[in-house]
Amino acid sequence: MRIVLQRVAHAAVTVDGQETGSIGKGFLLLLGVSDTDTEEIADKMVDKICKLRIFADENGKTNLSLSQVDGEILLVSQFTLYADCKKGNRPSFDKAGAPQLANHLYEYTASLFTNLVKRVQTGSFGADMKVSLLNDGPFTLVLDSETICPSTTN
Image (cartoon, rainbow, N blue to C red; front, side):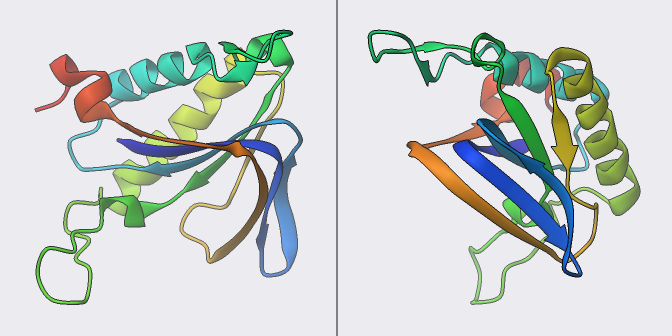
């Protein structure tokens, strides 16, 4: 599982000109799934994200978690995070998870966040989405389950 996390002042996603989700202060999460990902991996990734201390405290230090700032989450599926650009000029997406598995883990991940975060919004799995955001910092992290939870990956 790969997640690009952007700390945002606000973010929104639209499909066919209709807004499907928007948030204020929080995280925009772009989620990619591989065929080896599991619910156990999603559990660990969600736990890690919720505990990350990347918001400024009263002294300006990045010391506060999402819950400590009443942050929100916008979760957007993005299979292109598993693009392989080693050969030629056209990316291969062979390492991306099959749509049925990817959608299941996307929905599962969203449900986990719903139990932990005050407000969770999503994009539309498999749709052509337009994402807008105001990156706060900018502060962007790339999280990969192979490094976050290596004991659960093959």
